[in-house]
Length: 270
Image 1 (cartoon, helix red, strand yellow):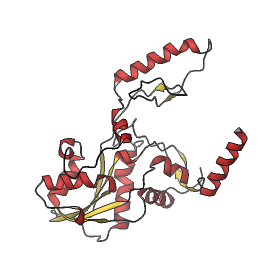
Image 2 (cartoon, rainbow, N blue to C red):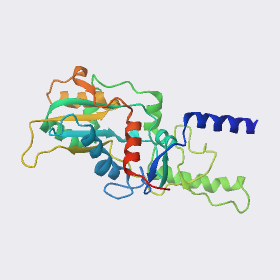
Image 3 (cartoon, rainbow, N blue to C red):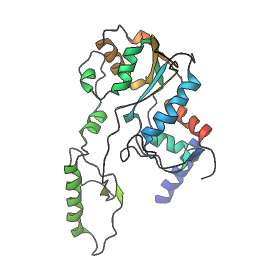
Image 4 (cartoon, rainbow, N blue to C red):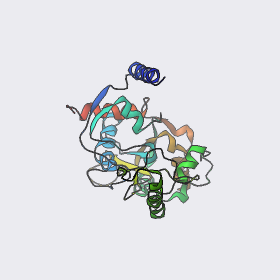
């Protein structure tokens, strides 16, 4: 049965062309273990390279200031140095969001959202545009990355020595599941990550700013999921925006936009 399953998986991967290589990731890019502006933070890559390039290539008006924003929860894994394949793209971001756009937003309002980075979640709670949380999102929010959880997991690893050989292999550092059912359900034991760094809720970049002064209006570009929050923030500032003001900035999923960027910029052998 095991060989049959392996054969089935290999055939499915081949049919989906999951091993197709877009390019080579030049360095490890971490989501939870490095911070902006360090070179190994995926936030640094987004802010300095990816988002500005996307805005420049897809901008409908090169002379218009454009703020590009993506929710950090849209990314679900680190990027490791080596091949970036179609499989990698789905692991990195499994969602089908495309980029949405709101044109002609007062520049000061757009700048305020950009500078805030959505850290102040009081602005997006209990607003009429909010989406109902799914059970998956609720579970994700319930996970704790605090030091108490890390210490508890280290204690669990010590307790589990009773069930292993007298000289068990040393676990490698990795993700340890922590949820409402505890933290002892992982099939593979890992040493908890020594340091967890939460990225900003929203990762932003801006292009098209004039050399002097500031424009009257700007365009906001963001992933589909944050549309309710974006509209809530703008309306809380006294601006009248609704879903009729939202349009597609690109038709393809952001996952495909990222893959194309990798193909154009991270060439070579790996």
